[in-house]
Length: 410
Image (cartoon, rainbow, N blue to C red; front, top):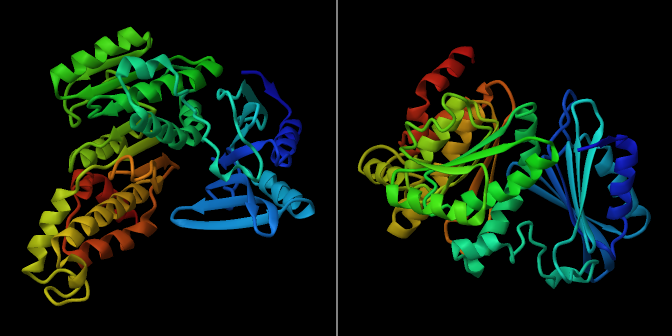
């Protein structure tokens, strides 16, 4: 992809953001090399129609903290956009009624800009567009969906997932500079999202002149055979499938993958996948957990002892007294513990909703990006949460040597 002057490229982005009748949405994410990180991890911009009139809305996210600024069109909106563009974000994604612009800041501080036509036939933009049909990053008419036999719900899940992957893709491409980009889906199952991730990543890797190789791993030979056949029918070069377990997966013959996916792997299979990604040192990890039975069982056992912040009748007891509440709380607790383990071991983690719960009740997604060295400051939070609820998360057991090494540094 050709490079251009960053100042001029950001001026183009500014013009698009300040054309509210044409703007659909924009996202600023990632960080530039060698500078302090932006004030927020991610900022989404879109025009909105409020009772006070048309505004530009900027939603900033840092971990679980979300803040919203609604700037009236005019000087205040322009000032908000200028403040945003002054932040050292590494990637900008701008969708308008006619085009999609993607800007990535290179290691040298230059801009790589890609423009493509908006794929939808009709797009509503501007502040009045609250009820518009969302632009799809993977075209709903893509022949891939016909090959997979995917209906409307699956297509929406695919698009929602790709939207979560998109801001992290530049980090993976940077890690793969000068070689092929490697992605693996551990416990891929029917592989709808494996196919979609490969389709979308292939386009991004191609822009950078890099090849892409994606491997889906599953223990069921019939599932792998079916996915191999469908990959051939869809004409997806570089996509393959292998029979194997998550624990023993080695899809690239000793080389570490740049992107690790684990989507709806049941119970502790998600922990196996996260542990595998950490041991590989993979820079980008996306995991959509499924059931959380292990922690549920531990909580049930702790209720008979002295756990739960004081045992039966303690402060935590009302949260887990009823089975349905215990099940839901175990989901939250498990993913909170997983996030803390990953943070201790050097990942920036977001736990987000990746698709509306109408389409699947298992709609949480852990997005993790490797940022460098370990973060011992999170050990106290991890230890306190484990002690309070009398549980030992599987991911902490899988990565005990790594956690012990960080503990020795603290």
